[in-house]
Amino acid sequence: MKKTRLLALSMIVVSTAVLNSCKKDQVIVNTNGSDMYQSFVPLEIGKYITYDVDSSIWDDVNCIRYSHKSQQQYYVADTFRDDQNRLSYAVNIFSRLTSADNWKVDDVIYYTPAAEKMEVVQKNVRFIKMVNPVKDGQVWQGNSLLPQDDQDFNYLKGWKYTYQNVLQPYDNGARTFDQTVTVSETDQVLNNPETQPDDYGFLLQSKAVYAFRVGMIYREYTYWVYDPVPGSTNCRKGNGVIMRAIDYN
Figure 1 (tube, one colour):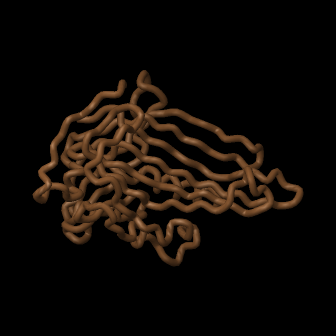
Figure 2: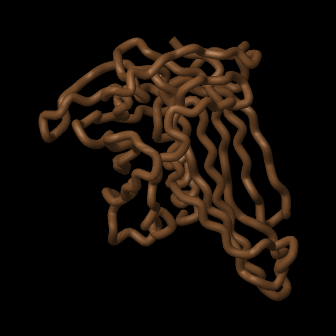
Figure 3: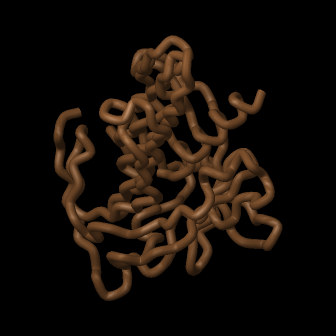
């Protein structure tokens, strides 16, 4: 039961952020103030972003890494006022296996774009995904609103979100965007099982890239643990995902 919940929590981290050929999108930022985070996460009813999604699961029982391809679409469906009377947005997440399949509602995420920070809630878990101002080196505790007394959240504690490569171009593997900002959420590595098979190791990396006037155009998250025990298979256990924006309005 606990393993199932940990996997669910990992996928929350993956999916909380809004929003075929290598096509280039030309935009110009007004550097006199419009490079605030709201410029990189435009929220209005009817806006959508479609992603190609590559998911991975490391199975430590069978020593297999499973891969899965699908598509998701983030669609801004409605607005409401939260319990602090702040304007918020309901974003529906649709999923399908291929472009030939019909979309099905998979989840709903709630965005609250406050003056200094953007709060994102999924499955009653709240994150601070972006803050003002958007500038290289800006650091904040993006997971500070998570329950502090729940051990299942321990691996999410202490993450230092950092802005990098502000207003730089980014190629997400499907399209190139001229002006983006990268949010490095965490980058933790301990030992390499390939070279240190007798030592405990883990990898925890998470980042998102946002394009000006578009939204999130790339997402990468990986978390695996390697815990060698005499007589066991001694394989990695974890999951990961890569999301690439392929279409938007």
